[in-house]
Length: 171
Image (cartoon, rainbow, N blue to C red; front, side, top):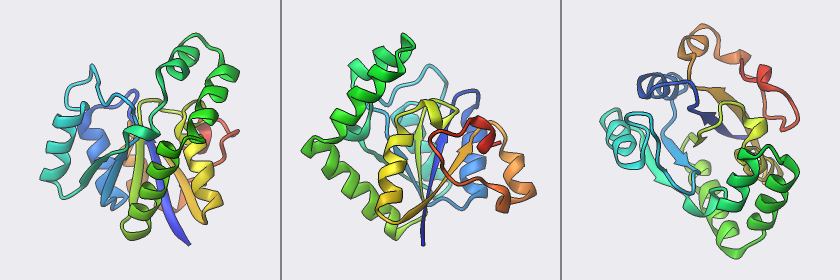
């Protein structure tokens, strides 16, 4: 079965993110932020791409798999139902479906990790994308970026994706 990983960089720095990706032998980082910007040094699109290229990881931006502004606003306001409604509707668009097909094709060829900001995949749109990947036959695992040493200890303990499971699934 093909694997796809997800990761959120909240609470982590660029070094921790890169170390986690290298430990897991990730070949492609799929950035699923609509706006690949960050206040954290090195985690905006260009800086991140540069750093990943230095260590042999390909950076791919999947803008059309990003959460639209209305979804981000709802999530910030704590309206999870509206956030999910906006993103599910967005995923029905031809642009999002095309980007999903491209992401899964990339992940079929190279070990890929889908990245967004939120540390916990349960509260992030990447869990909805992960559900789609599971339906396409992928086995999905959630990582956290701020504890790379965890994966050095025992990578077999990584939990499979379950969108209704708490953050403890990744820890």
